[in-house]
Every structure is written in C-alpha cells, then in structure tokens.
Length: 112
Length: 113
Image (cartoon, rainbow over all chains, first blue to last red; front, side, top):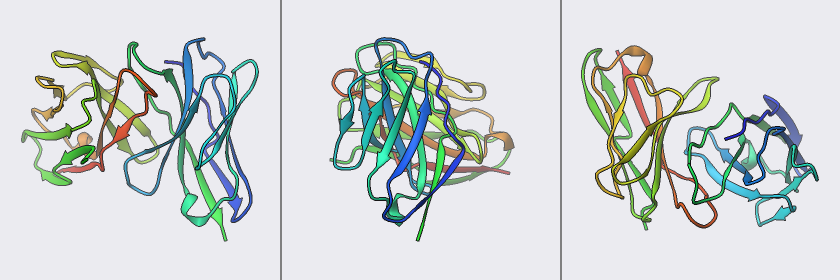
C-alpha cells in the first residue's frame, strides 16, 4: 500500500467547512483513497472512499485531484462533535492482498 | 448485529505473563487485523489475516502471535508481556469484496507493569 502524508493538526471554526488535505503521490492505479476518523479513544470509523471521481455522502465530500496524487476531505459544516483524528489511507478496495497501514493522521480541533 | 467484539476491554499484566486478546466478528469478513496505538504513533499494524489458516506480519509483529482457525475469530497472543507492549489494541475486519471498508472494535487497553 502507498504511503500518505497529512498535516499533524488543524483548527476549524464551528459551522465552517473543514478541509483536510492528504498527499499520496505514489498511489497505484488500482488503489482507492479512504478516510477514517477516530473520536477520542474509540475505534476508528469509516467516512468515505473514492478512486478518481469526487464522492459525497451524508458525512463528507472527497475531492481527488486529476493526477490522483492528492485529495481533500471536506466536512461542510463542522461541529464540535467532528473534533477527532482523521486518517487518510490508500489501499486496494477488495479482492487483493490486504496489508492496510495507517499513519499518524490529522488532529482536527473544531473551535466554538 | 454485534460487528467486531474485543475482549477484554482493560487488562493489567506483570512483565513475563502471557495473555490472549480476543477478537470476534459476525459479518463473515475474510480480512481481519490487529493494530496497536501509542501516543503520537498513530495506528501500527501488528498482524493480519485474509482468511482462515492464513496470517501474515504487519509493521510491528515482534512479541505477538496470531492464528486464524475460523473466519470469525482472530486472537492476539502475548507470550511474555513486556512494558513496551503497554498500548491500546484495536482489531479490525473487512470483506474482501465490496467497499473494502474496515470495521473496528472498541479497543483493548493493556498495561504491562
């Protein structure tokens, strides 16, 4: 699996959009970008994933650059409950060799 | 539907003792894995399995053993606990088809004195 690079921490005002960047310059053609978040000491929770098209669900939007070397997770209206560590990983979606590694992630602090 | 269940949630061991962290999932997922999380280190992969009878090492396998005799269970064994193994351990599972989403347990906090 390819490695990712994320900022260590970010702040966002409550009610504003939180834009979390991720670099994955060595991503392979069959690897997807996944985002997870970990609130306090709970187990990480899946947010969204995509291959090359932008994706949106009820939690967030994922914007992937055309060359697929970077992506941005967007939380459109951040709330205090979105304060968490956000992990960006890349992996083959399914059916392949499944060594899934995480980095340190980005600690997002939503400020009232 | 219980998802991924880890036991125990908390455990205190003395150096040299052995123990097993249990992980069970009821989603018929082929892929299962163990991570440890230490302050400032993120999640580090210990061992993983892509099916019954198949296991492989992750980033930090030393001091840990695993086996996968059934699809549902993936226990993590510490044969001789060391203070360096004090950590929070997470088990995760994923189908090998479909979205590839990882489902995590609630974690097991282990302290080795």
